[in-house]
Structure formats: structure tokens, C-alpha cells
Image (cartoon, rainbow, N blue to C red; front, side):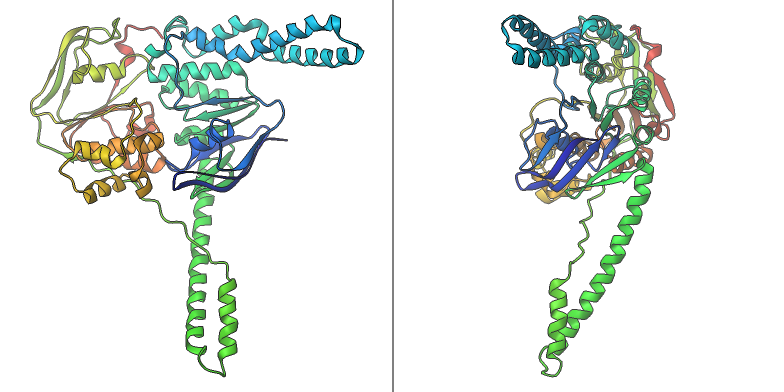
Length: 518
């Protein structure tokens, strides 16, 4: 049974086409992975099917009484709301149904026989729905899910705007699970989640009976939970049965077959054109030339898609720093309350270190305290000599209306336009991306712009806070290679062991130093 039908979908932003005549059908129980490079339109597709965005052309049809739950990578939580408020807001539609049920009960005394029958039927449907979605055990249900995701330890009365990126994702995920939707729509759910909760989400999706659509660049995660891949490329959407690894095999074969067919056809076209050119002027061969010309005119010409620029990252190594890069003396990190015990850490030249640990434990806060971006609660951090620090921030807030070119020019005013465009193109951005405002780009494209700034500076130590979030597979591979080649030192926050294991030579587990209990 079809849950969602998308027919002849066409959409774009300005002169940048995203989809061209795309059709899609979601069947009951399908576990779909939606994949493609950054900027191909995966999040846009999700916004269209959920009704947040109107397509230029085409229609989107949901089956009757289907409830979709959407975990958005850019979801915003309002200030002043507590975790409990957010979780309880899940049940707002059910509260409205309860109001309607009470209205029906009040009206039953005045209704005639025919009307009574219709109202009773509606009343039964509402009661079934309330029971199905655990309406009568709301508080217990909220507590159960909050405990499973570690939200009880944070305190349900905590303001959602005080939470870290990962904690906010957990709150939104908990809200989604409480909704018990018929279909789950998940946009990069593993971003900001730590290893423990990624494993929990993996188990949840494996046992999930209904359908879901998952956008993710986390390949090991995709391989374990999906059975169908939809690949988004060059304004098209193609279906492949199996996991991501199987899709890559089939896609490679399909691509080589198309290239072979293209070469054969081009050879044939060349021979036909040559024959026409040589024979159209002679009376004796004119008819044969015209027949070949007709064949040329009717030919359905194979077109190869333009190759997307593959990102390349090469970090510039500056001057050699002193032996000691930084040293902390009884450093206590935090904002209103301590997040860590007094820390006595040090990092020497040539070290490459990964920082791991649960969300909200204080990884980002430690990085910012070392850099002096936020004051520590007590203790001090002493930076070494001749440091050239490159800092990649996890989240950049704000509505950035500058174009990519202007964004880079602010940091490198001496560059020519050619140098700016060339630097951005090397990071895998096309001309249309480069000329667009930063705010209309996808999360992965915005990350590439920030990485572009970083690789064009001389650095001798890199402080990277979740640099793999939002990046597509090619960009992730390129970044990994660049970090392995980098001659300087690295302090990296990351939740993907398969990414950092080959890069670093030491791991710091923040859970050993935290004051928090998770």
C-alpha cells in the first residue's frame, strides 16, 4: 500500500534547478535511505513532502489519516520552553481531538437518528486514536522516553535554549518518538549524537515496523538500517534495492554502461555527419545523404551528466610552534555551573588528539575555554609560543545574507576574484553555489565554505569541533586524507570512530573528567 505519492515534481531556487520531473512512491514498511552530494536537494525534498515548502510544479499526495513525524536538521526550539513543555507539545493535536470528543458528547442529546449515527462513528474513531497514541498515559510516556535518551538526567524543567547541539537533537528525537507517527522522516539524525545514542537509534530503527525516510552521510549507520536507497543527482531521483554498499556497486556498473553507450553513439554520429558532408552535394548520392540526415535528426542523443567537482582539502602549514602548545592548570570549564573537574592537560607539538564523550559533557566548552573564547570558572590555560590556530566551529548561527564570494573576501581582501572562485571550487562548490547567499546553501555546503577559509590560512594547530557533520561522503574522505597529511597538531571533537581512528594517535574521553552524571 502506497503511503506517499510524489508525481512530476519540479523545483528550483532562482536559476538553480533542484528537481526536474521527479516521481516517488513510498510503500508501507519501506526503510529508505535518501543519499546524494551536498546541495542536491535532500532537505528541500523533505520540506516539500512535509508541506513546509510549495513545489514549483507537481503534486504530493499522502494516504488518508497518515501521520508523518519529521526530525529536521535545522529545527529551532523557542526560548522559554522547558524540555517537558517541548515533549508535551507532542500531544497538542490529541488534546484538540479530546475537545472535539467533548463537543460531540454535548451535542448527542439534541441530535436526530441519522446525525446520531454519524456522530457516534466519529466518536469511536477519536477514542480509538487517543488510545492508540497513549493519550491517557501522557506523563508516564514522557518520562519513559526521556529516561531512554538520558533527558531525565538533564532535568525536564531545563530551558531548551541552554542545551548543546546534541542535547537539542535528543529532545527533538524524543518528541518524534512520542508522536508514534506512521512514517518517520529523519534528516541527519546522527549529527551531534554521541556513539552511545547512535547505537540506540540504530536498534530503534532496525525494530521499527512502519516506513521511514532517512537522510544521512553516516555510511555504516545507513548500511545497517535501510533496505532501499534513493539516489539524488542531477535533478533526478533513482531507486536502488539494497543497502548503500550494494547501491554503489550497481551505480558504478550503470555509469560505465552509460559511458560505453555514449562513446558508441558519438562514433556513429561522427560517421553519419561525415557521410552527409561528403555526399549531400552529389546528385547520385544525395538521397542516401538525406536518409542519414533524417536518422541523425531522429536520434535520441545520450547526454552524460557534468562531473561534479570533487572537493580537495590541503591545510597550509605555517611556522613551527614551540614544543608546548597549551597547558591547563586546574582549569574548571562551564557557564553557570562547573562542567568539569579541575583539569591539568597539556598538548605538545605533533600530537593529534580526538576528544570523545556524551553530549552536553563539555567538549565544545573545553575547546572554547582553551581558545579563550569563553572565560573558565577557575584555573587557567597557558598557550605556547608562535601558535597559528585554525578553529572550525560546530554551529554557526545567524541569517548570513552575504554571498560565498563576499564571505571569503571579508577574510582575504587581497585575493582576486579568480583566486576566491578557484579556492571555493576546490572545496567542491559549483559556480551557482559560489554566487549564492550563504543562508540558502545546505548544511554541508556551508561547512565547505568554512573549511575553505581554514585551508587558506597558515596554521600549525587545528581545533576542529565536529567537522564531519553535514559533509557528504566525498568531502568526508577528502577531509580525512587532508588531516592525515597535515604536518601540524590536531585537537578534534568527533563522534565517528571510523573517521578519527586513522587520523589521531591519542583519544581523550571527557566522561573521565565530567562533573555531570549521564
